Amino acid sequence: MLRITTKQQLMREIVDILSVLTDEAKLIWGEGGLSVTVVDGSHVALLSATIANECFEMYEVEPVEIGLELGKIRDLLTLAGPSDLVEMDYDEAVGAINVRVGEVHRILRGVDTSTMDTPNLPQLDFQSKASIDSEKLSRALRAAKFVGELVDLSMDRNQMTVSVTVEAGEGVNVRFESGELSELDCSSPTHSTYSLQFLDPLTRKLAGGLTNEITLEFQDKYPLRLTWMSNDGGAKWTYFLAPRVMNDP
Image (cartoon, rainbow, N blue to C red; front, side, top):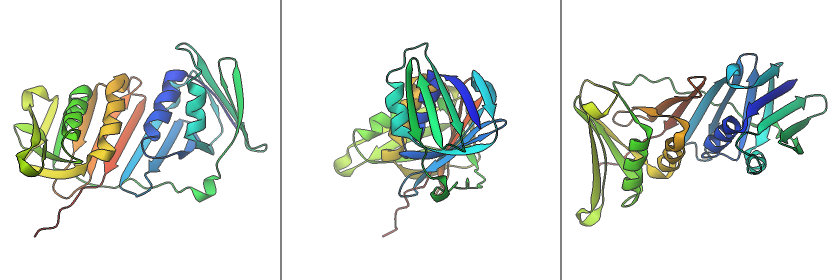
């Protein structure tokens, strides 16, 4: 059984961020809140979130899993006004998901969750960490996208750098000194390379007011881990992106 009511901004946030990687998601509704983990089709990126029940206007749940086509919810949300609430109820015996946005009511059929895995989050220990304003990070990655598809992230005890170098010497280099970062912890210099195809769309959405700060953790040939919070700390997000490892000549 599921009966929830939420502000349209929260549902839009959930749908928009998950949609960066997938068209379908298994939403696991527990007594304490919503959890969801998705991967992209090539298993290069993973995104996980926990949304506490306090983030919802109403939350009456007996633990249940629901598979949703995110595009159908996103279409409904285009009809929502700034103050509209989203209501969702689900009866497992019937199998229908009732969604109301304002005066609009739509009945959805869930996606079969038996075919949808719940990926495990990688358990990694990082030796470097930096926390940065989300708009500054997005702007640096947008600049990198102008000249290439891969971005080099570097860090030492004094700074973090976002850079791209392509043939003919063209490139972009954005340096953030320690004073521009709310956190910088790096015992020895490190760097790694990642795909902007996955990073740029995500950070653009986050810079649109969803979170003020993003924490990056990476090192040579390790996945990149991004973490951030939203909704006054009630929503916690983790994003992993596999490194682009270059073969030595």
